[in-house]
Length: 236
Image (cartoon, rainbow, N blue to C red; front, side, top):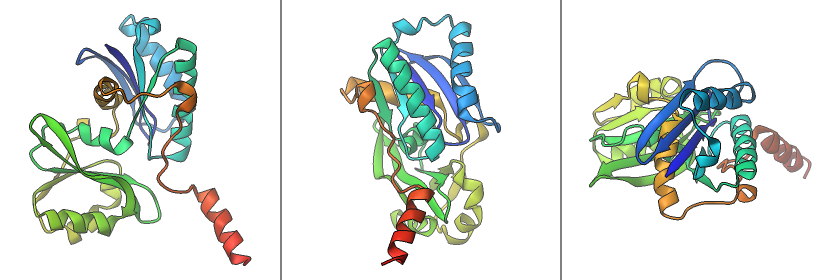
């Protein structure tokens, strides 16, 4: 089984190919350019490097949200176009789950933190045991104090990762009462390799979509939608 993974849910742009539990290649960039400029050229470079025939793929796994609204839309359009052209199913992988999967096998409670702005974070809580990832708290959009309070309630050591860590570092230092640590550089941001690997498991469970059925899971309204609702409410 050969899976193409794509992640454009944050500042990171990443593509990877996993075949039978082996990562054939991964191309990840965390630098300024927009995903509309990077994703397809990155895929072409990766395919050329590993001599990949896109027609040999079994599915495309993508970070399905939450995350950057613009990034998710670009990723969604890219994946749907590829899947339609190649007649492939799409595996929508929850973004926070995939981020946690970077730390597969970690002994502590894993807490991904993505900056959702307005003092909120896209987050969840995970534990690895018995060779599996167990979801303690499904991905959600909450205030940072809420998730830190839940970590304290569990009462076990925790490890943090994601672009929300530097944003919420002072809150972590102030509020977390259990021992905690931070993921190293090679594992603390989105990676398409994790999306593809977790996507392969979901594919095996039959959790696939047709290209025309796929859409991002935002978890909350966009800024434009929030402002529109505020204006409507203000006019009542």
